[in-house]
Structures are given as C-alpha cells and as structure tokens.
Amino acid sequence: MSWQQRITDALAVRRGKGQFRQRQVFQPHSGASLDVNGQRYLNFAANDYLGLTRDPRIVRAWQQGAERYGVGAGGSGHVTGYGAPHAAFEEELADWLGYPRALLFISGFAANQAVIAAMMAKNDRIFADKLSHASLLEAAALSPATLRRFAHNQPDALAALLTGADGGETLVVTEGVFSMDGDSAPLSALHALTRQHGGWLMVDDAHGIGVTGEEGRGSAWQQQVQPELLVVTFGKAFGVSGAAVLCQTETADYLIQFARHLIYSTAMPPAQACALSASLACVRQGDAQRQRLAENIALFKAGAAARGFKLTPSLTAIQPLIVGDEARALALADTLRAQGCWVTAIRPPTVPPGTARLRITLSAAHRPEEIQRLLEALNDARG
Image (cartoon, rainbow, N blue to C red; front, side, top):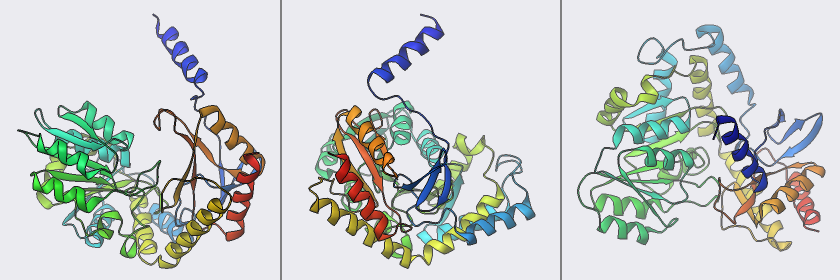
C-alpha cells in the first residue's frame, strides 16, 4: 500500500464513522462570544472558565514583557532561554501551591509526556484512570513501563491492581477534573492507596487549577492532598497557555537533567511568563469570578433538569450532554449554531464509543440571560 493510499483510506474511515475533524477560523469577541465567518455566537465551547483571556491586566503585562524582553526566548532554557520572568513565575507558583519547586513547560501535553518519559523505566508500572487525558495515556503506552488502566474514579479497582504489583516503581496517574466528563477524581483516596503501596501519584489538574480550592489552588489543595507530581496548565482558567510541574527539589533537578521535552524545546517567551504572573494575581483575587461561575453552573444544571435533560453528575464548568450517536451529536451542534450558540460535538476516539456528546462549558463571563438562551436553544434543538 502506498503512502497516498494509506492516507486516503484512513480519511475515508474517519468520514464514514462521522469522526472527521475540521478546524474553524475563530475571532474571539469577548469571554462569552466569538465570531465565525462574520457571524457572532455565544461561546459555550471554550475553557476560559474565569473569563481571563482578554483581561486588560494580563494583556498589558504581556505587552510590557514583550517590550522589555522581546517576543521569543531565543533558545532552550538549558542554553539561553531561561530568563528572570521564568524564574520569578516558577517561584510564585511553587509558593502558591505549597511545593519547593515548579518547572515551566510549553504545554500541558509536553509536561505530561516529559514527566512520564523521564520517570519510568523497564519493570515499572503505571496505573492510570481509564479516562485520563490522551497525553497521559500515550506517554504511558510509549514508556518502557507496564500500563494498566483502572475503572474510572474507582479506588477499589486501583487497590486491586496495587495489591498484585511486584517489583519496580509504581506511578498512579489521574486527572483532577476530567476534561470530557467534568467529574472530579477522589484524590484523597487515590493518594492514600498509592502511598500505602510505596508509589507516587501524578495528577493533571488542567481543569481544576484556578477554579477549585482556596484562591483557586485546584483539586489537590481542595482535597488536602499533595501529589508527588502535580501538573497544572495555563490555557484554561488562567486564560493564557503553557504548563508547569510541581514537585520536590530533587525531583525537579532530576527532570532538568532527563526531561527531553524541557531540554530540547525552546522555552516559552519571557513575555508570556510576565503575563502568567499577572494572571496568577488575577486568579488569586478571583473569588468573585469563581462565585459567578458557580452560580452559572447551578443555573444551567437547574434549567437542564427542569427541561428533562440528563447531564452527567459533573459539578464543574464542564457539563457534558451525552448523545451517544455521533451523527446525532453533530446534528445537534449544527442546530445550536443556527440559533447562535457555539457548542462542540465531541466524538470517538476522543471519548469512548457510544458516548458522543455535546461538551458544554460555562464561564464566569456568561450572563444569566445567555445561559437561558442556551437552554432554550437546547430545548428547541431536540425537537
């Protein structure tokens, strides 16, 4: 089979299953709306949970950083790319989250891949929640360690795997808030089990940081747990991009030596680190935004229940409406867009077969009347 035939066949399979992905050119208008092809929509698909993507304090910090430091780092952090703004933000972040060290990465995907690739060796074991993010599961599958997946958010299932574990090191992997289901991991129980068996817990809290816990410190802080490895990302509630790994000093030193994604990638622009410092200040002072978000979530859930919609048990900004059939999910998304509401249909392989859904996300930037408009559009869309 030729390369071209392989590509053609793979695309045909995706199209035939209703799983073909297409990108759109978006023009953000505000935290709650966007423009596509000259048409304005209410935005219920983004992860901008606190409405910070266009916050003038963060924009100004990035502009000032660019004026002072330029628009790029110019090299890996191991060469010439690690500047004062990076070091300052790492210190601020570590202090805020109660860890000795923080290491910045260009993305959450890179951070997850780097940590697992650097930490795991042959005869080690990775026990991952079966619904963990693709970056975690892919890294685990590619590592020399043995990967086993446990039933979603089921500590008893993890306990059974841990009891049978023998030899090598053990890493338990989960998300804090699951990106597609919106539910929260039982981190306290998972951490207790992991430590009981001499393992380490790694938590990707991309969707919890900034939103849950005191000052938005995230899922682990909320559950009074300090995982050995905590990954936080800045493209959701922080409104920017990038990620960091929080850990002990010696672990950080080890990752600096062996994390290839850190060593061989150009560092994030110093101006971005300036913006992240400003964003952290906004997040820490963001109780009002978190309260508005909580009110919006409650309003949506109550309205959906009153109209007979069956949502998942999520209490977070991620409110999935499970449809099941992929074509039906796409049709519902199209119908909502025709009524001015941008909602994304999520289909396999991103989610398990038979669980295609509308992934509805809420923000502190949404007004109550906009949420009511979404509810009415959903009601009309189902016919």
